[in-house]
Image (cartoon, rainbow, N blue to C red; front, side, top):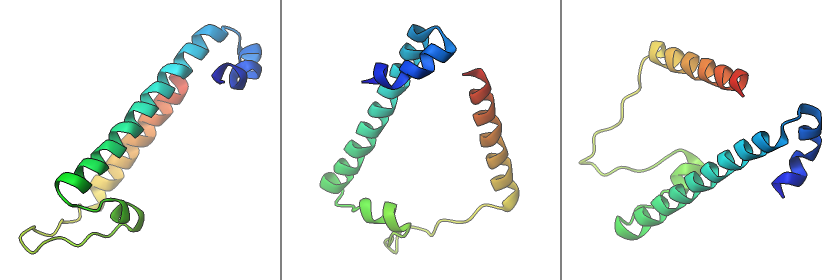
Length: 96
């Protein structure tokens, strides 16, 4: 199936085998990450009796009184991390 999706791209770029191999590696890594994520949600639901699906959708979760409230970080850290993310994405896009 991946070969069918890449046919036009490989004809245009050449070296289809290397591109297909890279695509399949990233596809397998994505599937593994999704599987681990779903497994972690199931473990939390069964072992700890935490519902993580609703908080993932809504962004809100009720915490017990014994758990301290999370604190927000300052805008400087947000800007720094966002800048690093944009630079990393740009470098990756140029590399591939």
